[in-house]
Length: 165
Length: 264
Image (cartoon, rainbow over all chains, first blue to last red; front, side, top):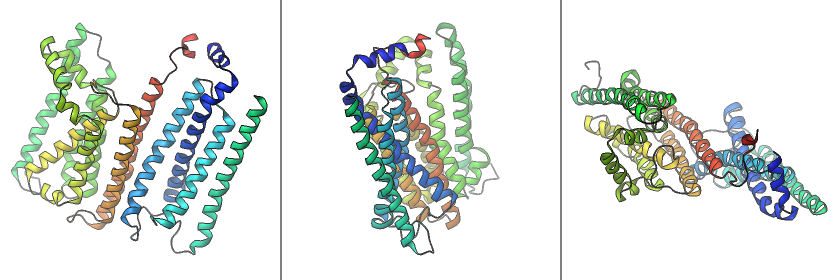
């Protein structure tokens, strides 16, 4: 461990931030996207069974977009975690920034799913046989709240870094 | 093979041939590993296990009760497809058969083999993009055209398609993760992109089958088979993603600083 911290000290704080800031951001973002896709699958498809695997009104383009998005999210969840492990072994984790990026990823996926998948491409709806509006509102407001808190956290992490630097 | 519902002798012929080949591979691999173990480093035990498990997955898909059921039951067919095209290739790859073959052959013959592996045509088909097309494209042709029905009419077609699923699955797996000898290497970004697209194409195909299963397959059976294809494919692709990311993680290790565990 001694050698690692020495290596980090060799960089100026500024240089360190520039080098690893974007990697912390990407790692968190990818992990957040993947985590929300996973939660969506486990909670809404499997546990509640509100979402349908396929509904008869799904257009072809919806199937294509959904397949692409889900396989990307699978990869993102795992790739993001391995990037995090890489940052850790370089003692380059910037926790606040990483968590902020995770929130942005979570909220971004939730909003994308709620607006593009559910409403524009109409791959499937949140729940069937109910008045959809309250569900859609709750879904998208929750997504927006995650996204906004992620952005706020990111701004704050920049500010506190500037103060320390 | 009187118990078969399809009544064509050529299916039985394929099963017999598959059995002989699998049995030969089952015996030759450990024999080669033990023999070369005297001359070179001892062949690790877990690779024997991978080889045995990979052959068992093939055997389950081609011979025995599952294969029998797969003629009439689409879900069983799909289970066989996952075993033959996805699980068996992954297991066999970790047994490193090409490395073993290179150890076993005489030096001139091994040189010939490695020249063959490096040749243009093999470079072409083992490129991740080509391998993905051969693998996933073959599946689209099988399930979205009349090929699936034709396969159950002709023994030769049945043999060809099953062989293709296995070989294309192996080719794809070895083009994405580098475990055995891999003369032509491509970057992580390209392989990640191909893996994501191939995984997406697999999911999309599963949903298309769910919506419109092959003509001879009933609705319920088609839906169950499609779900198995979707989630079973997810499970094995998850393994592929983890392995690929782990290989990136190892190769991206900072080189100049000693690793913490070396200092302990």
